[in-house]
Image (tube, rainbow, N blue to C red; front, top):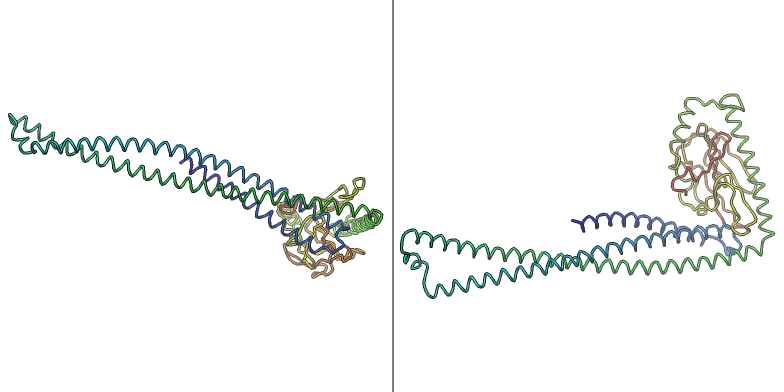
Length: 402
């Protein structure tokens, strides 16, 4: 029962680890495919470096998962070994009991055979001196027959138990062999992953060295990007201000209609559960102030998150709402702002839009197609969440984004 309990718990834990590993493998394969889409100029691409950093983190997490699984296997192997020792000891006891029972039975049969050569049961009974002695001899003979029968049954029972224990021992040995094989495979996979991480880190250093040589060009792009972020921020604030004013004819307070309030409450309830604005993607730029991946004395600021994805990926609304505005950000493509009551979501970096102002949209509804920056071979969506005039970290709202 103890072994069954341990095996059941282990199976549940391994099942969870297998699921985690499977998800990580999918993510690693996806980041690999994204890296392969970057142009031959990848050695000077910040996007390539960001995705590479993400993949290194994924692979390191995968190795952690492998280590946990190896640890679980070691625990199970130890339990099986302990059970194997116990079963071996039990088999030895059964074998001793079986030998005793067989010896006793053999002596009894031999004694009965010697007696049958000298006399027989009828003579044994009729030679009694009186009726009482004859009665006692009849009882004795019955008891002798019953004892022989029970002794034979005992031998059979011990033999059956011994056979069952030997089968159990063989199953334990087979199970142990399987676990050792699995452990060996996991260790080989762990070795491969560690080699892969080492290669990724070498590549990362090469990319960084190449990017350092392009410092002036990169810093100029950062200044341009900063200006675009400021323009987007001003535009979003202006639109939100207009939306709030439209709702209550005031630019200083926000008094939502019952319908808008209900929508806001539903949006709020889904924090941490919202779908991603693209079906597949990797977060390559987080919310807030971040250190530059190459120049440590340089900081970048993001009002939302940037998600790298495949070229021509479709963009989708993360929640039901109404399209407030579609506008253009110079050099960054089109942007869509969707109203969800007192919450707003912003989708920037589109080349095509499939909705128009005032359209009602639903969760996961397609709203457009992303553009690809051919110069940097990157396809990214810039995504923001606002509550009134207050910016929120989208990673805390999207499902499994941390």
